[in-house]
Amino acid sequence: MTRTDTPITGTEPHGSRRDLYAVAATALLVLAAVVIGRHIERTRHTLHVGWPPLYADWLPHVGPGTPAALATAAAVVAYGPSLAARLRWPALLAASWATATAWILSLALIDGWHRGVARRLTTKYEYLQVIDRFHDIPATLRDYTRHILIDSPDHWPPHTAGHPPAAPLTFVLLDRIGLGGGGWAGMWCVVVGATACMAVLSTLRALASEDLARRAAPFLVLAPAAVWMGASADAYFTAVAAWAVALLALAVSGRHVGWAAGSGLLFGLACYLSYGLTLFAVIGAAVLFLGRRRVRERPALLALLAAGLAVIPTAFTLTGFDWWEGYRLLVTRYYQGAGGVRPYGYWVWANLACTAVIAGPATVAGLRRTIGRLRPRSLHRSLPPHARLALLTCSALAALLLADLSGMSKAETERIWLPFTMWLLAGAAFLPRPRAWLLAQAVLALAVNHVLLTGW
Image (tube, rainbow, N blue to C red; front, top):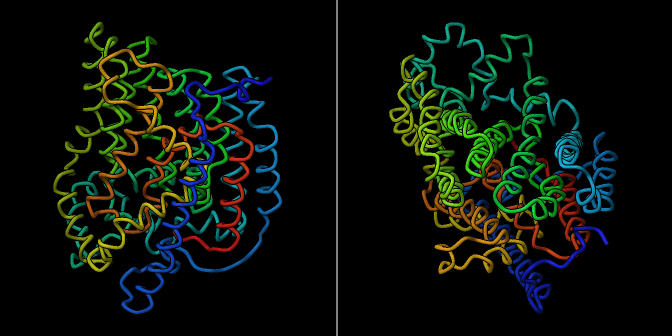
């Protein structure tokens, strides 16, 4: 019997039936978002998405990535759980990254190399449109906030205006080292983004248990979210934020305390890649809570975390970029554009339907089981592994809900919320019969990618 076939601690009677009820209820939520969204867009034209609630257009198609995507999905469904149980840990991490890369890239290539990878980051909304404006990087950073508002001279394209300068600066630096153009930028996002699963696995092993991490591995690899990680800068953001959490987990779990400095550095970078990633403080706080004994024993850990966290903000502040001013102007710019038209009353719940699509039915069922394993009265005691995993997953869910309620994420959350979704996927570790759930994940991803042409 393989490790992933063993009974899960605390298995519920009739749990599988309740899992299906949760999935069915979520499917009704998605259906309602589609039906109501199409009515709103047809009558009021206020959603600004082609196929509500997703930023996509109806376009059934196949492409050069179709055979590879089918083969990758079949291999993970058939062999993923058993290999995850047997492989040595370093080999499991490497295999997870390689398979996630193949899955993301093959899904992207269903739309073809040009449309699915090379052109994604070169459209009028994207970062590569501003490469030439960074010929003098310090001067551009000093002047960055003056081009955020839509009525300002030479205003930035939407994605550059909507993010701190570390996001476009990444692609400027790639261009400077000879990796210019949409192809290199797209592959950077795919290859780096695929490492996020390694970071989540490392965190689970450090803070929960290796067994739970191994159970989660196939679900982290074969996520429907991969449809939107192909050539999306948000995949790169996802990896940076995930590794910030992973390094902090290594620091508080008894590994070298110096990992805290690296964690702080990446947390700082994440905040200068996307304003919304400041909400990862919720997940970071959960990690510190789980490692509170280590934090008390080694106060230098917090000092190193703070020191690392100060590096990126200090560097950008000294060059003249004011993060707070940038965010204040972004809020104004957001309401100058589609954000000011899109109805909050629809998106506050339709965003959750988008999340259900990118997370998949296995994550919905896993979250149902996860929430049941976290009891507030037990938080003052030493938590068992399953409760530790539940706390991590619920902290990501809490951060996502805060983003939703803020009103600053109306639509396109299938892309914007990728960093949070990676942690929700981990809850699938609690599911019995993983192959059936992996098949459901794969079918959803393949169906979405073959019938819709996704945006960005």
